Length: 238
Image (cartoon, rainbow, N blue to C red; front, top):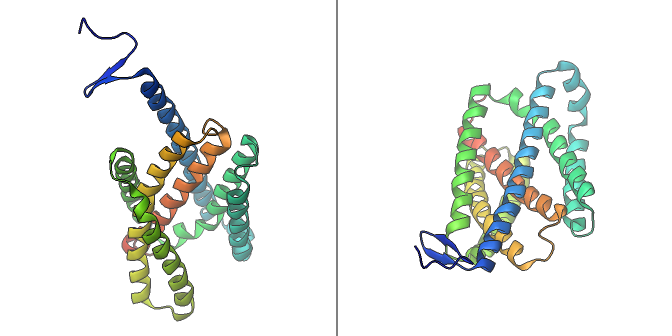
């Protein structure tokens, strides 16, 4: 060790040039901010869902507004997607938290439809799966870009099939859609994790707050949709 260059960092795989070490540090900081915002959004959604589902007064207020709230969610998330590169950090944060709060209100029906222990079990399974998939997206040497076309086709197929099944009310079709959704959103979790790290490496805006929140929204949506798909498959209804 006496011959180590003091300008280099060292790991189990050998010397790491200063520029590469600095890049690793900034990438780690960026992803930490992304996961922190995502976790904050999930906590806000879950807390509001629990509070609303526990209050008959709040249910009486919000349940008649269920469809308008769903539309409002779509408006907020699409607006943020189109404006993410133009808005300031505080505005991006406000839009993300507003979306998470609206989701919390509409997700209150989950606690009414499913047993609490079942919801907790599925959330734990989702969290464990998400962590594993994120780690895979981080450490794999395979370029997951090739997955994009398959995942997008699968996502559009799920949306179309869900709209059709809204009118058919087919239990078998619900099962098939849920299985497909688990596969698609599991793939998207790994793909989006790798994509965010690649964007960090290529973008000069990665230090901006709005960039971190945009990444948080991306992973938040992957987590939520994976959770909902698993809940439909594994959840025990009341």
